Length: 130
Image (cartoon, rainbow, N blue to C red; front, side, top):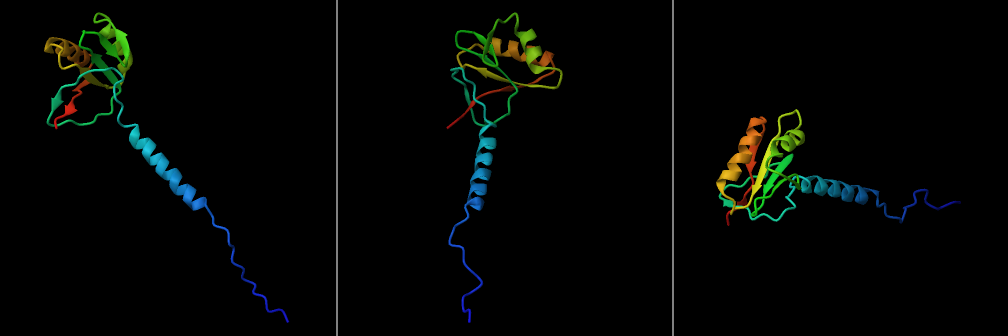
């Protein structure tokens, strides 16, 4: 007489479901972290009460010593329109202005005018007020 059970319990633990969960969490954090793309240039941004995060395609930075950067590449003011046109492309673009708070408003308005003449939407970067 054979009294052994036909149902044997497997003592090993399957890690496949745990790795699936970890993989999904990793993808989630990678996607949410890529929405905020800070500018790599040291600019002292002005503060405002309402500060929204915008996904930027083209960023124009004006430093304290009045140097112009388009997507972290230095450009002359005379060449700014050509470089912006190439950076925006043919589709409707969004230009985010990172302007130091010590820069006169005249330079900010000049860059915003160039961007709007290229039919791009302009947004000014700021830090949230505490």
